[in-house]
Image (cartoon, rainbow, N blue to C red; front, side):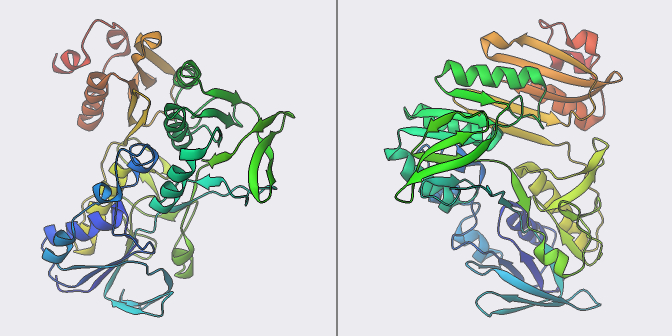
Length: 411
């Protein structure tokens, strides 16, 4: 209860882990060290309200300065840890890029992920933007103010959310996705097709099944994007959203097991049991869904896993049991996802996609796996509850669109 804890990474998982340590009765020093110059903030609004100018940095703060002061959590901002030395007992020293040495008795890695970069001609031109941190979002928000033609490379959630903001601001927007449908790794074709149509109805062009071969520029500034099919799209702003890469450098330095992320068990322990990890940087087998190993990029996962990690550091093993859930806001469309649909063999569509209010339930061998709900929160909440409780909703009964899923749960 008096050990000195170092949390490397000051995002959602890091802040939650530090707060949970105090909630669980830890009295020792806690240092939360982050590479960014800003105090810890929320990331999801960066591609939504913040990018649209409807929120400022103060409103994104995860906690107030008083919160950290009252709980004696030191936030060491603008300090990137570049080296970790670990003792056999689990303690050690961290060295930052400023030369500061941070001693610790227990270590937590909540280092997150970085955006995957384009590796093609013109990728370094002015006007080519990424969207991961608040500095990225601030630059992009400023560029949007004067842009006319915006090309979004990547049809995943971040790309589509940015496209929705740009189009709502009156810009000419084209989304380019190399796969044959949008959000291909996360949703069924019916959802992909719906979102392609929804964006097109609102004036955004969607180009599927073609990649980008080159970004053109003049005077160091982007002027266009050349596609693999030979099409050239005019552009004075390019937004790149082609996924992220977990930050595993420090874990690899320590010799921890890594496989597309830092490998952890259900107690957030790495291959060195004295070191825990949580958030976007981790890979785990999800006990609630039986799916894995996989990496979950979401706030709910970061929060739940951080709580587990904090308990583990204090010697109380509480397994991760959270049902994965996510959300995405695009225009006036709210997509809510609960569960993981990997390996589904049956779909149930409730409602009519043409009304922009419907849900899709996923099943495998008759067992409920997940839901994607568009502007249909009641279906989302019912399925999330069923997955959390370990119950199911029979596909044939759920298919009756006039029946409330909540009513089926209580029968």
